[in-house]
Amino acid sequence: MTAYLSEKIRILSFFSMVLVVFLHGQLISISSGYVLWVQQFVTGELTRIAVPLFFAISGYLFFQNFSKPLIPFFQKKIQKRIYTLLIPYLFWSIFGIVSVYVMQQILPDSSFPLKDLIANYDIQEILYAIFIQPVGTYQLWFLRDLFILVIFSPVIYWGIKHIRIIFLLGLFFLWINGIQYFVNIESIFFFTVGAYIALRYKDCLEANHLCPFVYYLLVCAWVVFCGVLAYYKLGYSYHCLGILLGIIVVWYSYDGVYSYLNRIKKLQEISTYSFFIYVAHEPLLTGIKKILLSISNSSSMILIIYFFAPLITIFICLIIGKFFRMRIPKVYHIISGGR
Image (cartoon, rainbow, N blue to C red; front, side, top):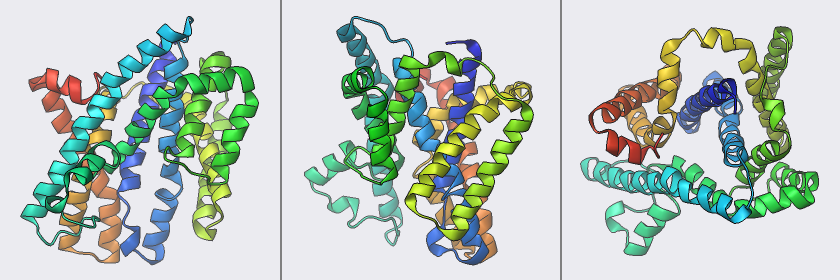
């Protein structure tokens, strides 16, 4: 992998993480009018490219240095993901359920979306919350699905090698028709897209591709398309096309703004905290939203909270992450998966 592509993946991963925080910052259930439309436009459409892009990048990184024999390759990759995915997942999952328990004890009238108080959970429900469906840190479903995909990566490799484009088109058909299983079909499809590119079209990612005019045209087309989707509330398949268009736009637009981003030295530093911000932003974001909403829940205030609560959350996560990295680097290394 070239230095340019490595930096591109790192910056776009950080950009995607910011989108995820804004996605989780939505207050759609208590919004109406223009405030509702703004959130449907940003959260419902623009930010939806973040997780698919994460999975595509993850699939590419998993297979980008593919080599034979197969068994040692997959064994080494899976062992590494135990430290980079599974251990952080378990830590933050336990952290999430403990945090929610503490909040429920401090604020007994808390309106967290849980059927029962954590204090009333039996051992089976606690284990389910830790290993399958995280409480508080619900964003960890991404790590859960990603680790499952890593386990089944030999199957994905077999499909790409023997069924080729038909395998990819089959997953695309399942995704665009909303057919879901335990592991989100969107996760499987985009992880496979990344793997397919790494195994068959690696060279196409290595350099700049388009002229600046095309970048601007693509961005405008994507933004307009998302606006139409948010306004007319078109079907799920159109939403999927918006995600595909958005990923293409973001990936190639980076080439057009690279020279500007390269001058922002601080961006290089904070982008290294992408994973930490991702795993740590909830339940912090929920807490910040609840505190701000207790001050006022007027339409204008809801819109202000929608944009500022994620920014405050990211800022706090950066401070905490930097403190951990400087003061207790061994702990930070473990909970951030060595990143």
